[in-house]
Image (cartoon, rainbow, N blue to C red):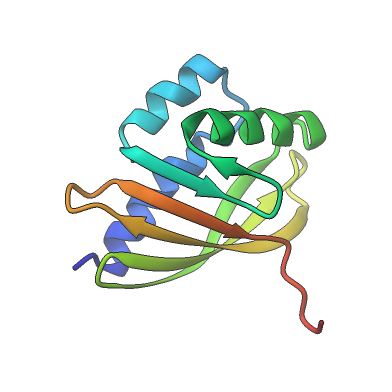
Length: 122
């Protein structure tokens, strides 16, 4: 069973890879937190590490210097829900969204599903 604190630390390492980094730096950073069978789903993308890297590069093109901050986490068994904020380089929050992750027995992210952006009323 994974704890909220463990997920927070793991996800913070993952979120750091979204900062302005080269693909080589990102790949190296992600090797520490992603399982070899990693899968990635967003409203726009579905795939693995290559798809994630493409999405990361795209965010830096759209929001130069942007980064993600975590707002909250809730975990049980091997699954966690996280609320994140996409923050512009000047510190302004652009959007809020949610990720659901599944963590492998080795403590790495094996599956990540992104729900973004959040809306308060449909």
